Image (tube, rainbow, N blue to C red):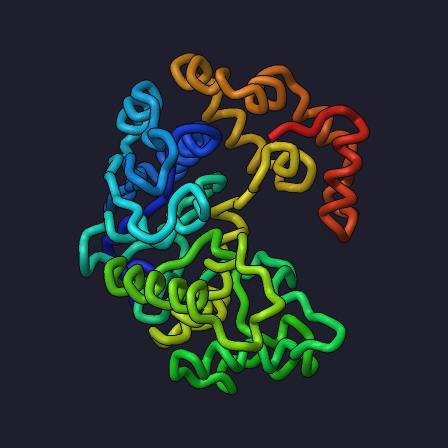
Length: 331
């Protein structure tokens, strides 16, 4: 089920009151601009008020109306396991808002679309996820178990084959040898099946982790610890070249606007500035100090001039610190 044979599928992001509301408007506007003939649904899943939220997480009415005018559907979901204490759990529980049996692609809300998704060769029978990640988990302690023992304990916990997930081109006990994703995008043929297993695995890891994880933090890494196990359990793995447009010519997971201007492509900057220019969008987005100052007051262009995209610092922290010293860091 690849390329045009994949047919219709749905696109999902999560949004709620606060920064994600403005990011969702940018996502929807860029999606509409670059995917005018998209046959599926663009769905924005919205957590509902409940005991796991101290306030009302729902979107402000003007944002909801703007998203709908951009062709997005806002669908509610309930938080039964996560919530304010672990908001990353929204991407796990939000899958329940999607129709059963319809293929989906999830994107973090801080994603900018720069090309047509139709050019991406999805195989929804073989799920995968973003490789734009760092070796953020696990953190190896001096006298604790290594990467192999930690990851093997998780695969054993769920009765999964560990050896087949290893990238044998990488050395033993080097983090890239082990299956690890950024949860910025992932996909599968059924959101309900994938979502339920994601919930089951995440709760088991959170509430009854193997002994090898005793020194490991799961906040905020729980979703990225569970994700490779879920993907492997459905017969998936690392993305192949057919998916190179994701985190490439088709999507940009920018994370924060200062980082977008510092390191992303000219195309990404052009799309961002184009889709945020119309007056109705500008009126809404100017409520965000970061968007107002970085995009509309031109501070993003100042950030961009500080870096050579062909020779960026290898460590993101160096980029962040350089922007902070210039007094231009906003989020």
